[in-house]
Amino acid sequence: MSSTLLHADARKAYDDLWQRTLAKINGDLNRLIYLASTRDYNSGRYHHAGLETHFGADAVREALETAHRELFEKLTLCSLEELVIQLALYVQCSRETPEELLRTWRTLQPYRVAIPLDVEPLTVHLFLSNLKLALEVLQQRQSRLQDRP
Image 1 (cartoon, rainbow, N blue to C red):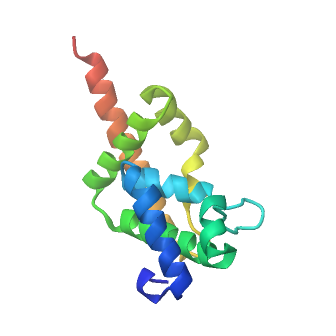
Image 2: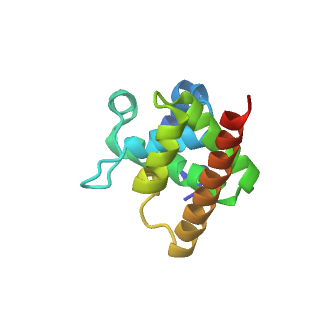
C-alpha cells in the first residue's frame, strides 16, 4: 500500500504522523522500531491514542501501517553501509551500552518484531540477512574502536 493511495482521513493522519512524530525521530531504523511499537502484538492492529482522537481509529491504523511498511521497504532496499549507519544511530539513541545492545540483538533478535505483517518471505529474508550483516559490521567497528589506545 503506497501513501499516495490512502483514504482522505488516513492521508491526513499519515501527514500528521510524519510532521509531528516521525520527523523528530533520528533515523529510519529508529522510526521503524517506533512504528512497530504502535502495533498490538496480539492482534496486529496499530494504535496511536493521540492521532485517534483527531482522525479516528481506522484512519490512524491505515496511516501507521502504511508508514511502517514504507520504512521497512526503504530499509530493506538500502545499501549495507546505509543500514550500518542506521543501526549505529539506533545504538547511539539507546540507553544501553553498544556492546550490550549488539550482543542482545545478535542473540535474541528483537528486531524481528519490526517486520510488518504480510510481507513477502523473500523480502523478510533479505531484511534479516542485511540486518545481521550490519550487526556484524558494526560489531567489528566497535571492537576496533575499543582496541585503540
